[in-house]
Image (cartoon, rainbow, N blue to C red; front, side, top):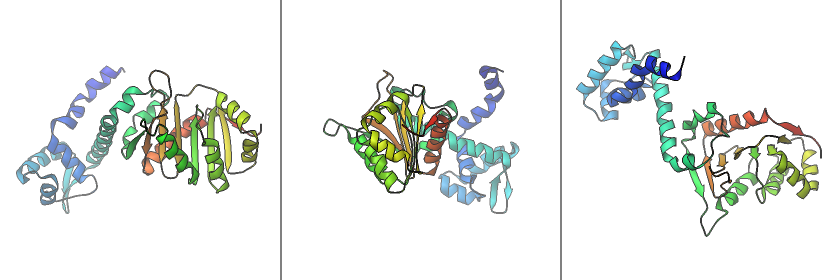
Length: 269
């Protein structure tokens, strides 16, 4: 079945997410539990009569049902509410970081994770300026040194990266790094003794990936730091998307696992 055919089948349901502001607000308000119309009126700032009219339509559609405390969602209502909540986060992340997504190569992020970028809603763009060109890298290196868990992928050389990772490892951090083949060769050449020492530590694991990668990212116990190549093919050293919260960190770990499954462990040099 084509995408066009699937749209035709789901068109009426999709339109229901945009045609009624009141209906959608009721879904979101009832997502976490039943409420009275008085509670809904206070929370939504909409007249009781308007809410009751929408609730009648939603009851007829099997989305809302009577509950002890007033009205609650049916299973169908809950599923639509969860989807609506995710859609809102997706749209907000898309719009809030519009320039970041528009001017960078997103091909390194698999489709199943792109559709879930709404979980990156607790994020900020860290951008260098003429006075502090390496502002993003300085912040990144500082975060690495204090991390208890590091999982990263890098197709580029970042000044101070190897030393910061070594510091974290010596402080007891669990570290898994994936480097592209050219970067592995450069790191081994420039930091031969350091890499040899790290490979002897059980909590440090190095991996090599043979394919080209257009993203550099690191997941720690406190954040996901995501950097991308620009659409002109040059890595953007001056702009990172730093994402916080458990959901963003889990998203970042899934991205790491995606590349880990395509990598080979380096056990010695």
